[in-house]
Amino acid sequence: MRYNIAMTDRQQAILAAIIEQYAEIAAPVGSVTLAKLFGVSSATIRSEMAKLEDMGFIEAPHTSAGRIPTDKGYRFYVNGITEATMTELPSGIDRSARAIEAHVSSHINKADRAIRSAVDSLVDLTGNFGFATIGSELYMNGIANLFSHPEFREGDHVRAVATLIDNIEPWLSEAQPNEPLNVFIGSENPIGKSSGATLIISRFRSPFSDRSYIGIIGPTRQHYRRTMELVRRAGTMLEEVL
Image 1 (cartoon, rainbow, N blue to C red):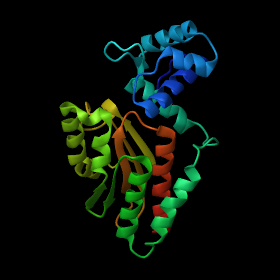
Image 2: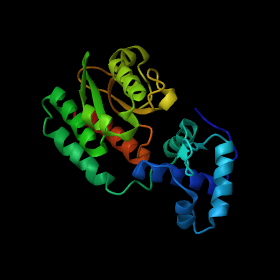
Image 3: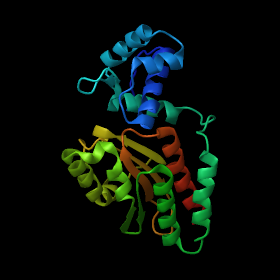
């Protein structure tokens, strides 16, 4: 999904800052915080935030003075990540990727264990729920991680994300996502549209199938650049090793 909306460089930077700050603190981001970050007045930030809200990229939850990203805002941000050359990778990404590679390589002659190990590594490194297809089975880990996030403490969200998890395997078999890296944000999800969850999937070739998948499910409040790169690398490593 693409949005052809004229946004200034500063508005894009403010949107990115809101997304990244919200991922860290799990609370609406206010103008005072952003004013300090950008070195401008709070009034200037409030004006820009009002424009971003009018465009549908951010919203005010309840009566909070701060703002959080919408699914549309996340999509604009993620599109920017996928279209950009990954020259500025998140801090520590290579170290984390090497940790995945070490675990995968230790099971080079046992494909199923290698895939399980990659999933377990993603769970540990991202704090999300992880899964992968192993033949006609789905290996999953990290359910405690998923439901420890504040977004999933309410009953409606819990039920919706549980529905998403329950239907991942049949959906993958039917839809067979074709991109090397697929990102479904919130309402974009094929099932559990009201879950407030993000689904990031990497497709790879394995001894079990030319269309094997590994991925994570987490809240839309996500460290996208880091998580997307780790999921992508996990898929690439598995394809190379297996």
